[in-house]
Image (cartoon, rainbow, N blue to C red):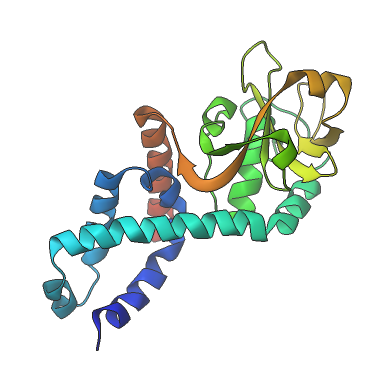
Length: 227
């Protein structure tokens, strides 16, 4: 039996966890190597013996790159589902530093909740950090599921929403309001538009921000083991 065939069931088993950690590890080979080393512990002994460390390291980089591609495809291919889930949250009140619809959602926690709930895609907590995930795109390139950013507090990328098409976006605006759809072309939002990002599995987060996201991933992994 070929090595490729032996590895396939293990890679499939690891995919849900890899999907969560790809955004934090895809750009960091050292951590990718550690993650692959952990995965190797679950491989049959004869397979592990046949796999040189250097080959496993290279395979790990390639594997996380493929997972990142799948994440990008999931955002694009499931944009309708993503938007429908976001629409279901319309009317939920704005509440600063809350993370669940039951208690309320602020601007960035609304976006984070929708992506995590629908795609299992873990985003950083703050809108400024989200602005460094994925690749920048122009306003003319916007597609449903892209993130749109605004300067609402005299700070760049201080607010974020999800583009839904037809020049509209859904977001949780501010205290005293609730999740709603607004027009990018309106005077207020047009003036404050600060750029857009398409989630493609890449990022340019700082080490501390990436570590913060990795800690959240590890917390989720521990929680899943206890179920």
